[in-house]
Image (cartoon, rainbow, N blue to C red):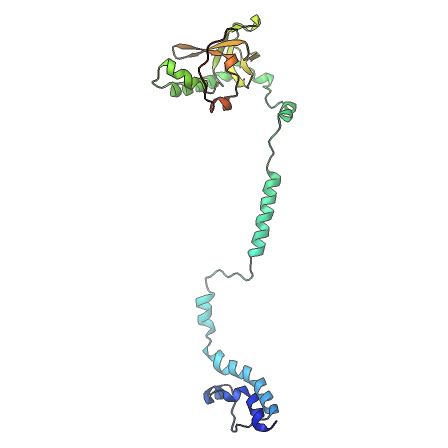
Length: 240
């Protein structure tokens, strides 16, 4: 290969004279040997950066416009944030308390009322709250229309009295409802005693305003949460 063919290997010779001059490359002849081309290639990049790029770069202005008073992420945090969120979710799942089963609640006496708390005067404020709740619920409706609302009402705090029962010992018991389950009323009597009265085969009365409402336990065997969403149908009164 002659010198003319080797000159095609020298890419820098094709640059303009001004560019070659700024890079420190000056060629007086078209024919350049391979050794000369290699030497020129080695010095081209540093000379070009120093003469052409560095002079145009203003460090202070770039710092003020791109760095100063700005938040700069020095690394890609996407993966770290994802892992942190996953760890946080796992901790929440681990710390989230699981609901107790009915057997566990019985074992822990969750629904047990301590003996020292079985005092009638302690439940009188609850009864006053229930009366205010009934006043809002009753409103301006008549007693007949109010019975439908009463079926879905919460009875915690109400004063009830057993007026009829298949078990004669229950008749006449009165007190404030402390707890209501699907099948029983737990009431605190004026003598500071806890009485567990089954709903089945018992008839109760509840005084509200100047009216006395009758509750048939056989038709009232639902939890308070179930009654609030249940649609009741009128049924004939079944004698005990």
